[in-house]
Length: 325
Image (tube, rainbow, N blue to C red; front, side, top):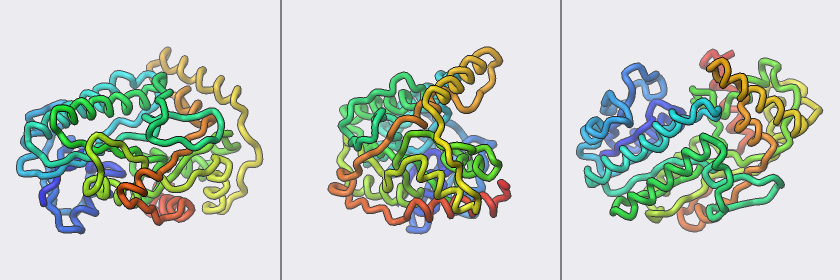
Protein backbone atom coordinates (compact mmCIF):
# COMPACT_ATOMS: atom_id res chain seq x y z
CA UNK A 1 0.00 0.00 0.00
CA UNK A 2 1.26 3.51 -0.80
CA UNK A 3 0.99 6.03 2.03
CA UNK A 4 1.66 9.77 2.16
CA UNK A 5 3.15 11.29 5.33
CA UNK A 6 3.73 14.93 6.29
CA UNK A 7 6.25 15.87 8.94
CA UNK A 8 8.33 12.80 8.11
CA UNK A 9 11.64 14.37 9.17
CA UNK A 10 10.35 15.13 12.66
CA UNK A 11 10.17 13.14 15.89
CA UNK A 12 6.74 11.55 15.50
CA UNK A 13 6.66 11.54 11.70
CA UNK A 14 10.08 9.94 11.41
CA UNK A 15 9.16 7.20 13.87
CA UNK A 16 5.94 6.55 11.94
CA UNK A 17 7.70 6.41 8.54
CA UNK A 18 10.24 3.89 9.81
CA UNK A 19 7.40 1.71 11.16
CA UNK A 20 5.48 1.90 7.86
CA UNK A 21 8.59 0.95 5.88
CA UNK A 22 9.26 -1.97 8.24
CA UNK A 23 5.73 -3.20 7.50
CA UNK A 24 6.42 -3.16 3.75
CA UNK A 25 4.43 -0.07 2.74
CA UNK A 26 5.56 2.35 0.06
CA UNK A 27 5.90 5.81 1.56
CA UNK A 28 5.82 9.23 -0.09
CA UNK A 29 6.77 12.37 1.84
CA UNK A 30 6.94 16.10 1.29
CA UNK A 31 9.71 18.04 2.99
CA UNK A 32 11.67 21.25 2.80
CA UNK A 33 14.88 21.20 0.78
CA UNK A 34 16.99 21.92 3.86
CA UNK A 35 15.22 19.46 6.19
CA UNK A 36 17.35 17.30 8.46
CA UNK A 37 16.67 13.79 7.13
CA UNK A 38 18.69 11.91 9.75
CA UNK A 39 15.53 10.37 11.25
CA UNK A 40 14.68 8.67 7.95
CA UNK A 41 18.16 8.06 6.60
CA UNK A 42 18.52 4.87 4.60
CA UNK A 43 14.79 4.32 4.07
CA UNK A 44 13.48 3.63 0.58
CA UNK A 45 10.88 6.40 0.34
CA UNK A 46 9.79 8.99 -2.23
CA UNK A 47 11.03 12.49 -1.37
CA UNK A 48 9.14 15.50 -2.72
CA UNK A 49 10.48 18.98 -2.06
CA UNK A 50 7.84 21.46 -1.03
CA UNK A 51 5.66 22.64 1.82
CA UNK A 52 2.09 22.67 3.07
CA UNK A 53 1.50 26.06 1.47
CA UNK A 54 1.51 24.61 -2.06
CA UNK A 55 -1.48 22.47 -3.02
CA UNK A 56 0.07 21.55 -6.39
CA UNK A 57 3.11 20.04 -4.66
CA UNK A 58 0.87 18.18 -2.24
CA UNK A 59 -1.20 16.76 -5.09
CA UNK A 60 1.91 15.55 -6.89
CA UNK A 61 3.30 14.04 -3.68
CA UNK A 62 0.03 12.17 -3.05
CA UNK A 63 -0.23 10.55 -6.48
CA UNK A 64 -1.17 6.90 -6.10
CA UNK A 65 -1.46 7.13 -2.31
CA UNK A 66 -4.39 5.46 -0.59
CA UNK A 67 -3.83 6.74 2.95
CA UNK A 68 -2.48 9.97 4.49
CA UNK A 69 -0.89 10.61 7.88
CA UNK A 70 -0.64 14.31 8.71
CA UNK A 71 1.95 14.85 11.45
CA UNK A 72 3.51 18.14 10.33
CA UNK A 73 3.06 21.02 12.74
CA UNK A 74 4.70 24.09 14.20
CA UNK A 75 5.03 23.61 17.95
CA UNK A 76 6.11 26.93 19.47
CA UNK A 77 4.13 28.40 22.37
CA UNK A 78 5.12 32.08 22.34
CA UNK A 79 2.71 34.87 21.40
CA UNK A 80 5.09 36.12 18.69
CA UNK A 81 4.43 32.93 16.71
CA UNK A 82 0.67 33.41 16.23
CA UNK A 83 0.90 34.06 12.49
CA UNK A 84 3.27 31.18 11.80
CA UNK A 85 1.15 28.83 13.91
CA UNK A 86 -1.89 29.81 11.85
CA UNK A 87 -0.04 29.56 8.53
CA UNK A 88 1.28 26.05 9.19
CA UNK A 89 -1.11 24.37 11.61
CA UNK A 90 -4.36 25.79 10.23
CA UNK A 91 -3.90 26.97 6.65
CA UNK A 92 -1.31 24.29 5.89
CA UNK A 93 -3.65 21.60 7.18
CA UNK A 94 -6.46 23.04 5.10
CA UNK A 95 -4.28 22.69 1.99
CA UNK A 96 -3.41 19.13 2.95
CA UNK A 97 -7.07 18.16 3.41
CA UNK A 98 -8.00 19.88 0.14
CA UNK A 99 -5.32 17.93 -1.74
CA UNK A 100 -6.38 14.67 -0.07
CA UNK A 101 -9.99 15.23 -1.10
CA UNK A 102 -8.99 15.99 -4.69
CA UNK A 103 -6.67 12.96 -4.77
CA UNK A 104 -9.43 10.61 -3.65
CA UNK A 105 -7.45 9.11 -0.76
CA UNK A 106 -9.33 6.59 1.35
CA UNK A 107 -8.62 8.01 4.78
CA UNK A 108 -6.59 10.62 6.67
CA UNK A 109 -5.26 10.46 10.23
CA UNK A 110 -4.44 13.98 11.43
CA UNK A 111 -2.32 14.53 14.52
CA UNK A 112 -3.66 17.22 16.82
CA UNK A 113 -2.81 17.68 20.50
CA UNK A 114 -4.52 17.30 23.86
CA UNK A 115 -4.04 21.05 24.25
CA UNK A 116 -6.86 21.27 21.66
CA UNK A 117 -9.08 19.60 24.27
CA UNK A 118 -8.20 21.75 27.27
CA UNK A 119 -6.71 21.81 30.76
CA UNK A 120 -7.95 22.17 34.33
CA UNK A 121 -6.88 24.15 37.40
CA UNK A 122 -7.24 21.11 39.66
CA UNK A 123 -6.30 17.44 39.12
CA UNK A 124 -9.33 15.99 37.35
CA UNK A 125 -9.54 13.57 34.43
CA UNK A 126 -11.15 14.87 31.23
CA UNK A 127 -11.99 13.25 27.88
CA UNK A 128 -12.61 14.13 24.23
CA UNK A 129 -15.90 15.87 25.10
CA UNK A 130 -14.36 18.46 27.42
CA UNK A 131 -15.22 22.06 26.49
CA UNK A 132 -12.12 23.68 24.98
CA UNK A 133 -10.77 26.41 27.29
CA UNK A 134 -7.32 27.30 25.91
CA UNK A 135 -8.24 29.70 23.10
CA UNK A 136 -5.84 32.25 24.60
CA UNK A 137 -2.92 29.87 23.95
CA UNK A 138 -1.63 30.39 20.38
CA UNK A 139 -0.47 26.79 19.86
CA UNK A 140 -3.51 25.17 21.48
CA UNK A 141 -5.85 27.43 19.53
CA UNK A 142 -4.11 26.63 16.23
CA UNK A 143 -4.57 22.90 16.88
CA UNK A 144 -8.21 23.39 17.84
CA UNK A 145 -8.74 25.37 14.64
CA UNK A 146 -7.06 22.60 12.63
CA UNK A 147 -9.64 20.18 14.00
CA UNK A 148 -12.48 22.48 12.97
CA UNK A 149 -11.07 22.51 9.43
CA UNK A 150 -10.87 18.71 9.54
CA UNK A 151 -14.53 18.41 10.51
CA UNK A 152 -15.49 20.76 7.66
CA UNK A 153 -13.69 18.49 5.17
CA UNK A 154 -15.37 15.46 6.72
CA UNK A 155 -18.69 17.03 5.75
CA UNK A 156 -17.38 17.29 2.18
CA UNK A 157 -16.74 13.54 2.09
CA UNK A 158 -13.10 13.20 3.19
CA UNK A 159 -12.69 10.55 5.87
CA UNK A 160 -10.57 12.14 8.61
CA UNK A 161 -9.76 10.75 12.04
CA UNK A 162 -8.01 13.01 14.56
CA UNK A 163 -5.67 11.72 17.25
CA UNK A 164 -4.74 13.83 20.27
CA UNK A 165 -1.44 12.63 21.74
CA UNK A 166 -0.47 13.68 25.24
CA UNK A 167 3.12 14.70 26.08
CA UNK A 168 5.41 12.49 23.98
CA UNK A 169 8.80 11.17 25.05
CA UNK A 170 11.13 8.68 23.41
CA UNK A 171 14.24 8.25 21.30
CA UNK A 172 14.48 10.62 18.35
CA UNK A 173 13.13 13.89 19.81
CA UNK A 174 15.35 15.85 17.45
CA UNK A 175 13.52 19.15 17.99
CA UNK A 176 13.86 18.82 21.78
CA UNK A 177 10.18 19.38 22.42
CA UNK A 178 9.22 17.31 25.47
CA UNK A 179 12.79 16.07 25.84
CA UNK A 180 14.05 19.58 26.62
CA UNK A 181 13.18 18.96 30.27
CA UNK A 182 15.84 16.23 30.38
CA UNK A 183 18.46 18.50 28.83
CA UNK A 184 17.53 21.26 31.28
CA UNK A 185 17.92 18.84 34.19
CA UNK A 186 21.36 17.77 32.96
CA UNK A 187 22.47 21.41 32.57
CA UNK A 188 21.37 22.33 36.10
CA UNK A 189 18.50 24.51 34.93
CA UNK A 190 15.80 22.53 36.74
CA UNK A 191 16.15 23.75 40.31
CA UNK A 192 12.49 23.31 41.28
CA UNK A 193 9.38 21.61 39.93
CA UNK A 194 6.12 23.21 38.74
CA UNK A 195 2.86 22.51 40.59
CA UNK A 196 0.79 20.98 37.77
CA UNK A 197 0.67 17.60 36.12
CA UNK A 198 0.22 15.92 32.76
CA UNK A 199 -0.37 12.72 30.84
CA UNK A 200 2.60 11.14 29.10
CA UNK A 201 3.27 8.52 26.44
CA UNK A 202 6.11 7.00 24.45
CA UNK A 203 6.46 7.88 20.76
CA UNK A 204 6.19 4.25 19.65
CA UNK A 205 2.88 3.88 21.46
CA UNK A 206 1.60 7.01 19.71
CA UNK A 207 2.57 5.51 16.34
CA UNK A 208 0.70 2.33 17.28
CA UNK A 209 -2.35 4.43 18.18
CA UNK A 210 -2.17 6.27 14.86
CA UNK A 211 -2.11 3.02 12.91
CA UNK A 212 -5.05 1.72 14.95
CA UNK A 213 -6.89 4.97 14.25
CA UNK A 214 -6.28 4.50 10.54
CA UNK A 215 -7.58 0.92 10.65
CA UNK A 216 -10.45 1.29 13.11
CA UNK A 217 -11.08 4.97 13.85
CA UNK A 218 -14.43 6.51 12.98
CA UNK A 219 -14.20 9.48 10.59
CA UNK A 220 -15.24 12.68 12.30
CA UNK A 221 -14.01 11.48 15.69
CA UNK A 222 -11.00 12.32 17.87
CA UNK A 223 -9.07 9.90 20.07
CA UNK A 224 -6.81 10.75 23.01
CA UNK A 225 -3.54 8.79 23.00
CA UNK A 226 -1.88 8.72 26.41
CA UNK A 227 -0.59 6.36 29.08
CA UNK A 228 0.42 7.63 32.54
CA UNK A 229 -1.02 10.60 34.44
CA UNK A 230 1.76 12.00 36.62
CA UNK A 231 2.40 15.22 38.53
CA UNK A 232 5.39 17.24 37.38
CA UNK A 233 6.95 16.53 40.77
CA UNK A 234 6.93 12.80 40.00
CA UNK A 235 8.18 13.29 36.43
CA UNK A 236 11.02 15.45 37.76
CA UNK A 237 11.98 12.78 40.30
CA UNK A 238 12.06 10.09 37.59
CA UNK A 239 14.26 12.23 35.35
CA UNK A 240 16.75 13.04 38.11
CA UNK A 241 16.90 9.39 39.08
CA UNK A 242 17.75 8.50 35.46
CA UNK A 243 20.54 11.10 35.22
CA UNK A 244 21.74 10.11 38.71
CA UNK A 245 21.32 13.52 40.32
CA UNK A 246 19.48 14.63 43.42
CA UNK A 247 15.99 15.92 42.50
CA UNK A 248 14.89 19.43 43.49
CA UNK A 249 12.99 19.67 46.77
CA UNK A 250 11.03 22.84 46.15
CA UNK A 251 7.85 23.52 44.22
CA UNK A 252 7.60 26.68 42.14
CA UNK A 253 4.76 29.00 43.13
CA UNK A 254 2.09 29.80 40.58
CA UNK A 255 2.45 33.58 41.00
CA UNK A 256 6.21 33.43 40.39
CA UNK A 257 5.74 31.36 37.23
CA UNK A 258 3.11 33.81 35.98
CA UNK A 259 5.38 36.84 36.54
CA UNK A 260 8.27 35.14 34.72
CA UNK A 261 6.06 34.17 31.77
CA UNK A 262 4.49 37.62 31.54
CA UNK A 263 7.90 39.29 31.68
CA UNK A 264 9.27 37.02 28.95
CA UNK A 265 6.30 37.69 26.67
CA UNK A 266 6.66 41.45 27.17
CA UNK A 267 10.39 41.27 26.46
CA UNK A 268 9.75 39.06 23.42
CA UNK A 269 7.48 41.72 21.92
CA UNK A 270 10.04 44.48 22.59
CA UNK A 271 13.14 42.81 21.18
CA UNK A 272 11.46 40.53 18.61
CA UNK A 273 13.12 37.41 19.99
CA UNK A 274 11.52 34.31 21.48
CA UNK A 275 11.99 34.20 25.24
CA UNK A 276 11.61 30.92 27.12
CA UNK A 277 9.44 30.12 28.94
CA UNK A 278 6.57 32.04 27.40
CA UNK A 279 3.40 32.83 29.37
CA UNK A 280 1.38 30.07 27.61
CA UNK A 281 4.11 27.52 28.40
CA UNK A 282 4.29 28.69 32.00
CA UNK A 283 0.53 28.47 32.42
CA UNK A 284 0.54 24.85 31.28
CA UNK A 285 3.13 24.05 33.95
CA UNK A 286 0.78 24.94 36.79
CA UNK A 287 -2.35 23.48 35.21
CA UNK A 288 -3.36 19.85 34.97
CA UNK A 289 -3.67 17.88 31.75
CA UNK A 290 -4.99 14.54 32.96
CA UNK A 291 -6.81 12.69 30.18
CA UNK A 292 -9.06 9.65 29.89
CA UNK A 293 -8.01 7.32 27.06
CA UNK A 294 -10.92 4.91 27.40
CA UNK A 295 -12.44 5.83 24.02
CA UNK A 296 -9.22 4.84 22.22
CA UNK A 297 -9.09 1.62 24.24
CA UNK A 298 -12.75 0.78 23.59
CA UNK A 299 -12.94 1.63 19.89
CA UNK A 300 -9.37 1.11 18.68
CA UNK A 301 -8.05 -1.50 21.07
CA UNK A 302 -5.33 0.96 22.07
CA UNK A 303 -3.08 -0.42 24.84
CA UNK A 304 0.20 1.49 25.29
CA UNK A 305 2.97 -0.74 26.59
CA UNK A 306 6.06 1.43 27.23
CA UNK A 307 6.31 2.82 30.76
CA UNK A 308 7.11 6.52 31.04
CA UNK A 309 10.22 5.73 33.06
CA UNK A 310 11.50 3.51 30.25
CA UNK A 311 10.53 6.12 27.66
CA UNK A 312 12.47 8.78 29.57
CA UNK A 313 15.47 6.44 29.79
CA UNK A 314 15.39 5.93 26.04
CA UNK A 315 15.09 9.68 25.47
CA UNK A 316 18.08 10.38 27.69
CA UNK A 317 20.13 7.63 26.02
CA UNK A 318 19.29 8.94 22.54
CA UNK A 319 20.44 12.45 23.50
CA UNK A 320 23.67 10.94 24.84
CA UNK A 321 24.27 8.86 21.72
CA UNK A 322 23.43 11.84 19.50
CA UNK A 323 25.88 14.08 21.37
CA UNK A 324 23.35 16.54 22.75
CA UNK A 325 25.43 16.52 25.94
